[in-house]
Figure 1: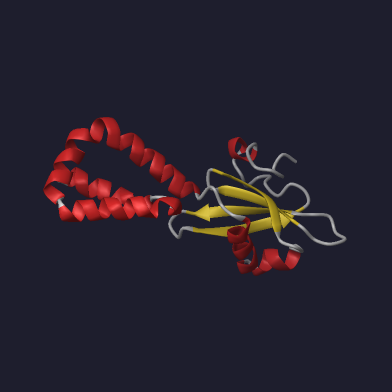
Figure 2: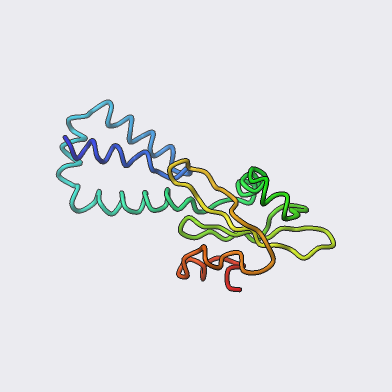
Length: 153
């Protein structure tokens, strides 16, 4: 019974694109709690653990993310939005392990890279900094920076 409760708590961390699966899981648990609990406890060591780990890492990472979502985060940070010209919007979005970068499209100016961080507790993205050089330096872990466009400088 305790294992079923723990697994039910993990289902809240499903990624946005699998909300239907989470709804189905919740509905199944609500309609047949005793059989679901029995199945969960008998399968927990072999099948539930890998699925739970994969689901929670995807949810906490926030990836993939769209340019539109990052533009909202960009505009929400007045300091970054006033220092960097967005122009036609963001392009070349890259996302890895809760970090993202995107490139601005200003007219008659050099494009800037904007760095974003995903807050898993709030399930939101935040713009941290933007610029033309070194936006990831001293902020993004080195193993993550290699996966993000604009972080190699």
